Length: 243
Ligand SMILES: C[S@@+](CC[C@H](N)C(=O)[O-])C[C@H]1O[C@@H](n2cnc3c(N)ncnc32)[C@H](O)[C@@H]1O
Image 1 (cartoon, rainbow, N blue to C red):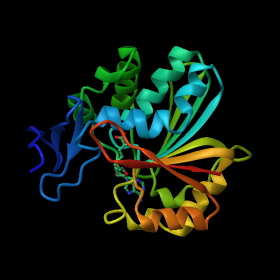
Image 2: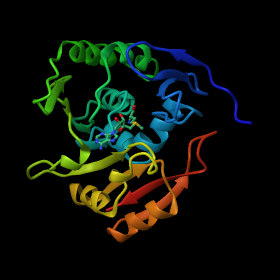
Image 3: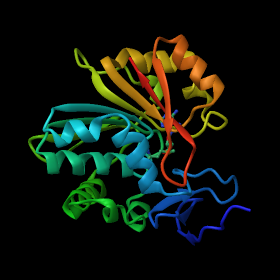
C-alpha cells in the first residue's frame, strides 16, 4: 500500500492541497486522484526533471542567457524555481508558460511556493503581480517582469494555439501537461513535433513520462531520446529528449 499523504481542503476550486513526501505542497483532484506533481516530492520532482535534466539550472548558474517554454504553468512552481536560479546566477531569462486554467491567487498563496526558493522575494513579487493583474477572457498574454534580466510571459491559451516566438527558439521545453490518459491532445506526434520545431539545435525537451507511446512519438519527430534515472523515491526513469 502506498503511504497516505495528508490532504488539506481549500475553498473555491475542486482541488485539495496534498503534502508530498519532501514536505512541499501540490494540488490534487481528490475525486480523480489527478495531481499536479509527484506525491513523492513536488519540489524534488520539479528540480530534477525540469531544472536539472534540461541543463537549465547549469546554464543559469553560469550566467548564460536562457529561454524556456513550459507547457502547463499550473502552480508556477517550475517557473519560480527557474526564475530563482536566474536571479542567483545573474543570468538573463526569458520564460514562456502556456496555461489554459489559471489558478486563483488565494490557492497559490496556500501552496507555500517560497519554501523551495533561495530568494523568497521572487515568490512575493510574483504573487503581488498576479494578484493585481486583471485577467480577462480576451487577453491572451500577461508579462511579469521581475527585473531587466528576467521576464515571464504567461500565455493564457490552449497550448495547441501557441505559435512560437518570432525569430527566437528555446533552450528547453518543460513538457508538463497531465498524463497522456488525461491530456491526450498534447501527447500527439503532431504537438510534440511542434515542440521540437520551437527548440534550438541541441535544445532539450524534458518530461516525467517515459511510456512506450511517448518514446515512439518523440523518436518519430526527430528527437534523440534518453531515459534517465528519476528523482530519489519517485519514478524510476524520466525523459530527456534532445533536438
Ligand atoms: C501537471 S500540471 C503542471 C504543473 C506545473 N508545471 C507546476 O509546476 O505546478 C498540468 C497543467 O497543464 C494545464 N493544461 C492541461 N491541458 C492544457 C492545454 N491543452 N493547454 C494549456 N494548459 C493545459 C493544466 O491546467 C495544469 O495546470
